[in-house]
Length: 294
Image (cartoon, rainbow, N blue to C red):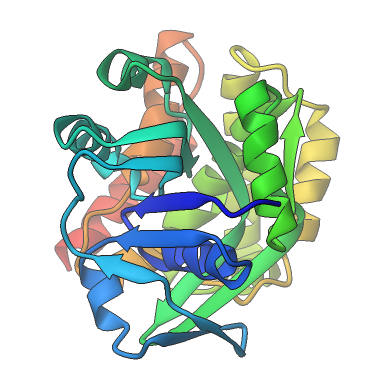
């Protein structure tokens, strides 16, 4: 693939991972970030113990610049801020894509950028410690929409060793990842345990099962989900052996804002809209609120 000019906005663990991978395949990459990017003191980063050069870093947004690809890798609560900064600084990208951990309606950003935002859903876990990034991939890999832009994103990432599929069932897959988030992320933080321990402990395993059932019923009203047994089997097989602590747990440890309201909070809102039970998600939110006060 010919050399591309790439800007990655909100470069935390997944943004630095993405940037290092693209940079290693000779693309011209720029990382824009703050806390996590500044914390990497070396000009090298270890991704699962393999060394990569870190691309050029920026700690403020460039102005009136052009890129082939712009990737937004910030937390969901900073998504709109990133979009506005791209617009304010008159940064242009042939393709603008957002790596999202939830169900965000990207259509509202088209009016700001005068361009659609291509969403990416990632079935992997990431954690960064100083100059080390730990990636916990699953067979599901990275997914994006089946559109002209989605296919270009897929080609770029896949050519750099990040398997990405432009899938016609993308909406269903996004909803499936949302179920994963709602079942595991806050629970990992509440219990202070990695995913694999949540599955081996009887009490937390039962809680995952109840959350799964509730979330599936709610999201089935809006999204064309696969069969319940199929999604449940993938959830268990993909995450039951993972030693990964959720990003929510990592955010709690570092005193940062979390995305719980975008996961379990969203599920409660949607469930109430359709007059469906939300008691398990409400209980997670109550337990998490108590945790945040300790």
